[in-house]
Length: 145
Image (cartoon, rainbow, N blue to C red):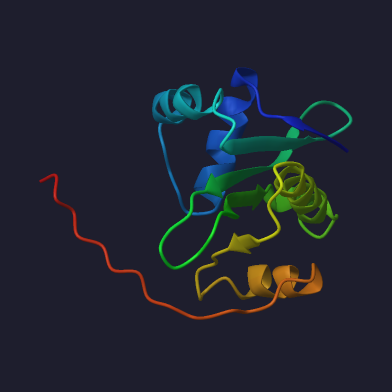
């Protein structure tokens, strides 16, 4: 397995993985978002590749600015491992890459949010040394329609 920065030729496989996590998207939409953020140093986009170059998983980590309540930090906003590669330490390798990215930016706090229904993900993050900080509800209102 090799971890590298995500590139445009990974987008189709990343889109499939996003669907496995419950985020179906059109490749064109993912491509458009990728193009907007890939050149920003506030985002880390990484893929884990198999020996034959297949995308085994991907991770996005975002640098978050100061707020009145919390200082600069980073959030893992997406971590998906292909169903056939789960339990092979792919996620752990991607998280380690994110941690290195965060430390290189001079940050010390890395957060990740996980849906309450993703018990396997919760066990994974606990194994990787993360602590449960709080449980919350997210409320959404679509203002576009």
